[in-house]
Every structure is written in structure tokens, then in C-alpha cells.
Length: 537
Length: 100
Image 1 (spheres, rainbow over the protein chains, first blue to last red):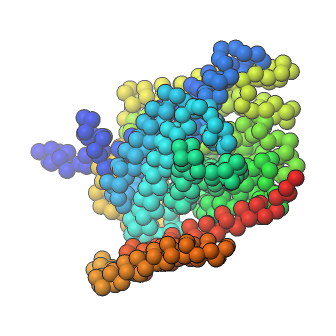
Image 2: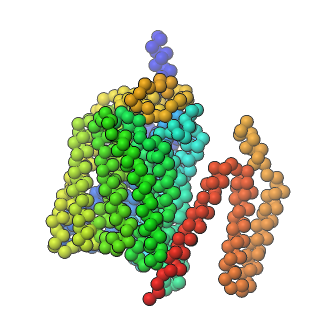
């Protein structure tokens, strides 16, 4: 009888309710997080499949399986879907939703209904982009004028979809900012916040302040195409470079919307698996804000060869180098955290370590590109493609996979097969490097990006790259299968499998609806590893 | 307690709303009127100044910014800084381009 009473008062796990309505009308941040997770992962796999297809085309110098127009369409869709449907909402919307209330000791986000609304706006944007596939654009994901004004493909529909997605991003950012300001548990001061929260905060600021600029830019583009107003067309008194300026004024900060949450993930994983307090907490926390701030000052480094003045190019080159400072601060502090740590090579940790290595390569090659003379040589070559993918895949996707493996037990209450996860990590890591390392060399040799064919002397490196893409594809396939299999066959996850000190691990796996039976009283930061732990937390 | 104080702060009389509305209408008239007179470059300056004043009135009174706390002010003013940055750094390009 007594047992029965206890069972009745036990909190109900958030996953317990079933039925489609329990999902699509749920205002529970954890369920909304799952809806984002499933959506972004689906788009990640679709856009990845596009990449495998056009990478196959590049196996041989001549035309192979597709004509140049199809090739152009495929790389446009790969870029647009990856950027706007996967990586920008990405970690921020999925793991941000799941983790922010749990980590700060709140029952939900500040505006749960708005949160659900953001998801539906995201889905609406996604549907519009899918409709655009009927006559897909071939402009590249940046939609540069004048070509985006002239092309007969459907630029309006896809940019309209991105415009709608922007609102989702802005509202999510607003929601997270208010949540972090207003709903922290008693004692959860700013300097006790987990670093993922600092990263999410910096990301949210960028989402709120930068996204309107791309929204208006795409509207101007639509106005020019439909009404013939000359914003960007020189024949009508416009300026095509103005489009690039506007576009990158958003899209460069957007690069940090993509990467900062992943940096937050790494800051969470490393201390847990090194069993050491994070080194340089405040430096890492404030460097997220510094990156967010500086990101607004560097947009024209995408435009050094497009005809901007030398004065502007020099100023932007100098400003670009400044970004290296806060990012390096993070890398050094993570490395210092590892030093003399008691390292557990869990699959999540393997992804975190990969992040540090690959992101450093991605970041440092960015410094090459920030140097004017080098950029003139390397711009629009495969060097750019490799650099961007080392940051976005080597950085953000590694962070995303790390987060998936790290918080999986908490989110779903199940364990996945750790050995298979490690094999998958190995394939992803090797496949990724084999795909993109040759592209650095191709770029320095002068192979331009965005062409379906190439001179025969580039074949060997392209073959390596294509084979790498297959290994990467197999690796990602195993990751997906392993994690899905865990949902059905996995062992039940304990509350805290890694002995983490962060608040989300103090609730059952999966967490109950509304997270905490009683709002916790926080008395210490979350990184006190290696010393006597405070049981009050 | 805090909520109550917040609500009281937001109580702006209906008179003020009508005054602001009246000012907005007059300023719209000014914009239209000025567009008929040729002041050269000043036309743009006047139009933008009037528009900025109108935006400020809407933000301060209709959107209650006047009674908001510091954090809200920071978030409201920061985009103005960004706008200045966007225009300022673009000037470093447009004014210094070499015309062949």
C-alpha cells in the first residue's frame, strides 16, 4: 500500500503521454526541443544526401551523372537547407530548448506558448522552402545579386521561406533571453550559470538583433524581382555590392549563431569527462559575448574581391583578426581544462576533442582568409569550402553529435550502444578529414568552387574527397541507427550516468513534466569536480 | 509587489496617448509638406529626422519604453548602434571606391 502511494506521487516523465496532439500542442520545452531535434536532423540528412550526390559527380573531371544546372541546384539546396533549416536553428533551438530551463532550475521557458509558436513558424518556413523545390533556385545559398535577380528559377519562394524562418529564430532568441534573465533558480547567479547558458545567451542576442537585417534584405530582393525597384541593379541606380553588405551583416553573425551553442556544449562536456573544474570560467563566458559583439564588425571580409574600396578592405581585415582572440581564449581554456585531467574517452568526449582539433583548423584557416593578399588568391576556391566545413562540420556538427551522445540518456531515459557509438565517431572523424583536407590543397592549387567539371590534374584529390564523403556518410548513418536503436532496445538510463554536477542531472531521466518537484536552491557553480561535492545542490 | 509597481508605472493617461497621436499626425503632415519643397540634400535630412522623432514617440509612449528598466533600454538602443555601424563602415567602402 505504501509503495502504491509512492508510485502515485512519483513525477510523470515528460515522454509518457502519447498521441499526435500531445506533441503538436505541447508547450513543454522538452517536447518542443524534440520536435526541433527531429526536424533539424531530417533536414540535415536530406541536405547531406544532396552533398553525397554532387560529390559523386566530382569523382571524375568530366560530366558524370548530372548536367551543370542540376549541379548548381543541388549545391544551392545543400547550402540553403543546411544553413537555414539545420545549422542556424540547430543546437540553439533543440538543445537550447531542452537544456536552458533544466540548467537554470526553471520549470519551462518564459513564454511556453510563444515557444510552440516559434516551432510552428519554423515548420511553415520549412514547408515554403519545400514548395520552392518545385522550381529550385540555382544561385548558391547566398542569393547574390545580380544573378538572383536574373535567374529564371524560383528565388522568391525560397527566400520567402527563409524570411519566415527568421521570425522563428527571433522569437526563440527573445524567449531565451527573457528566460535566462527572469527564471534562474534562487542562488543561480550569472557567474554560476553553466557555460552552455552563457553561449545560448550570446546566441539569442545575435538571433534577435541580426536576423531582422537578413529579413529586410530578402524582402528588398523580392521587391526588386517583382516590382522592379532598383536597390541592387546598377542600371536602375542600385548597387549589387549593397546586397552583399546587407546579406553578410546578418550572415556573418549567423555563423556565430551556428557555432557558439556548439562551443557551449564543449564547455559542458570537457569538465565532466576530464573530472576537473573548467579552466577560465569567466574568460569562456565573456568570450561568447565578445564573439557576439565582434561578429557585427567583420561582415565585409566576405567581400574583399567583390570590388569594395581598399580602405574598407583594410579596416575589415584588421577587425577580422580580432575574432581570433575570443575564440582562441576558448580553445586554450578547454585545453587547460584537459591538462592533468582524469580523462574518460566517452563517445561524447571524443566528439568534443574532435571539435577542438577541427575547429582550430577551421578557425586558423579563417585567419589566412582574413589576410587581404591571401584572400585574393584563395577566394572562391575550394580552400573556402574546406575552411567553412571545418568550422561548420568540424565545429558545429561535432558539437551537435557530442551533445546528442552526452544528453541522450537524460533526454530519452535510455542508453545507446557505446561501442558502436565509438566506431561511428571514428568513421565520421576519418571520413570528414578525408573529405575536406584535400579541398584545402585543391583550393591553394586554384580549383574554383561551384563548378560541375574540372581540369584532370585535380582528379586524385577529388577522388579522395569523394571517397571521404562516403565514409562520412556511413559514419553518420551508423550514428543515426545506433541512437534510434537505443530508443527501442537501449537499457534504462540512470539519473546521472556521468556523475555530472549540473542541475539537469539532478532530475530523473527522462525529466518529469515541469522538471523540478521543488525549485532547487543553488549554492555553488556547476564545475566543482575533483573536490568534495556540495550535496545541497 | 514588483508586478504591481510595474503595472502602475505603465499607466499612461489617455490624454497623453491622444497628444502623441496628434503629434504623429502633425509630423506626417510635415513630411508630406516638405516633400513638395526643394531643399536639395536637406529634404532627406528633414524626412529622416521627422521619421526618427515619430519612431521615438511610438517607442517611448505607445510601447512604454519610457517606463522600462535598464536592460530593455539596452536592447532598444543597441540596434541603433548597429545601424550606425552598418552605415558607418559601409561609408568606408562607398566613399573610397576607385572609379575607373
